[in-house]
Amino acid sequence: MTVKELADKFSFTVCSMPDPDRKIGGVYIGDLLSWVMGRADCDDAWITIMSNINVAAVATLADVSCVILAENVAPDEELKKAATEKNINLFTSPHSAYETAVKLYGELK
Amino acid sequence: MSDKLTFNFDVDGEDFTSAGQASVQIKRNLRQLGIDSDTIRRVSIAMYEGEINMVIHAGGGTAQVNVCENCIEIVLKDEGPGIKDIDLAMQEGYSTAPDNIRSLGFGAGMGLPNMKRNTDEMKIESEIGVGTTVTMRVNYGG
Ligand SMILES: Nc1ncnc2c1ncn2[C@@H]1O[C@H](COP(=O)(O)OP(=O)(O)OP(=O)(O)O)[C@@H](O)[C@H]1O
Ligand SMILES: [Mg+2]
Image (cartoon, rainbow over all chains, first blue to last red; front, side, top):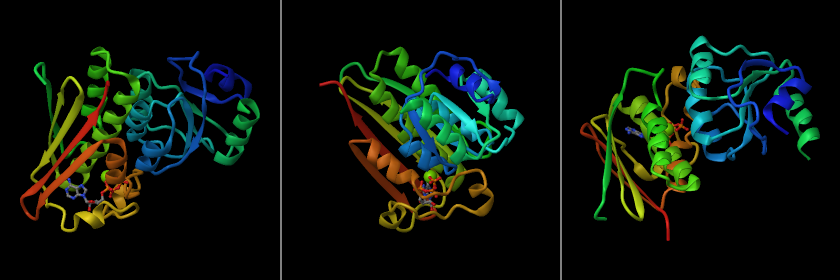
């Protein structure tokens, strides 16, 4: 499924979606940045509650397909700006990380 | 080794908003050079962790990336406090990051292990009160 299909299907709020056709390969949940950096796979959807600017560099370098901020966490202004500039798909989900992941699992399995 | 290409960066120790900038730039440069994506990923992850460590633990430093025919070498140099016990620092989960840094998502104690895991060679030279130099090498192609 593409990130756009995902965002549409579950009514995630789109903060930025420069690359709507990017395919989602899997899911990774985590808030500790170097943990995510080491363990997330390329093309994963990354679910987190971290919302500061450092999320942008990790998303770019780990090469995830999108970042989903769980529990309606709002991204910092700096992160929002960086997401647009750095080609990062950034959404917020009203659901918990667990519920968001379950929804994704249903689509990806 | 004949056609070595070198990139140099200053890593600002104050600025958290641009932390990781050099690594993001290197990723772009390597892509332009046509390096394979797995190699790029390894280099940029290892470099990011080293770059962030210089920002968090050492007040900044310099980064040099040498692109050779069969390997990419990353040299991160700082004049920070140094690492007292390198073996301990290398352990997963070991971190001296203060609370304000942890609240940003750092301090899992996974940075150095990530650097090790993503490179073929890694050397840490450190002297208390003088600084730290981390040299990493990623082999590719062939
Ligand atoms: N350049 C450096 N100068 C001084 N100390 C360092 C340097 N790099 C690492 N250290 C020390 O080694 C410890 C472990 O580093 P590591 O990168 O594994 O974890 P961290 O930076 O604390 O957390 P994380 O990388 O997971 O966000 C650090 O907490 C710090 O004490
Ligand atoms: Mg670190």
